[in-house]
Image (cartoon, rainbow, N blue to C red; front, top):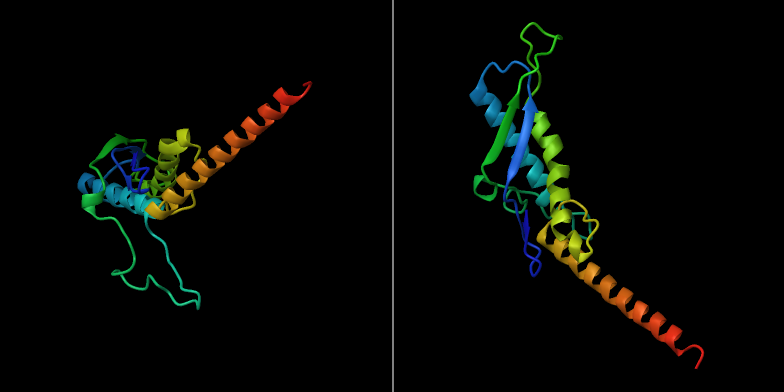
Length: 163
């Protein structure tokens, strides 16, 4: 994950996943499901949000206004396969599409927070849009300054005692 601390822009650099779909009947189709699920989860974590104006009218009512990722905004995914056939059906197959979606959204959001945690950011609501990331960075900086000021004032008070 790369975060531009001046603008809040987030760039997803690397995604590594492990998935167990049991017996895979069509490897190409399974890979496409995994790619789509991971991209969907990343989009949910970074961009997708339904926004309304103060009168309750949707501002993101069409794809012209609703942000989503395309293939140019996600890296090539590194997919590791596992195959543990299930005993619940004769093919041994399990579901494949949901796993990437479910796991990637929190993983991506946590990676954003982890990338800037050293600056004092501990939480960002989804989606981690550039605006939200930038505001979180500004809030962390404001908090750091206030804490530093208060620590300096307390130290000054203590050093002034006994004079």
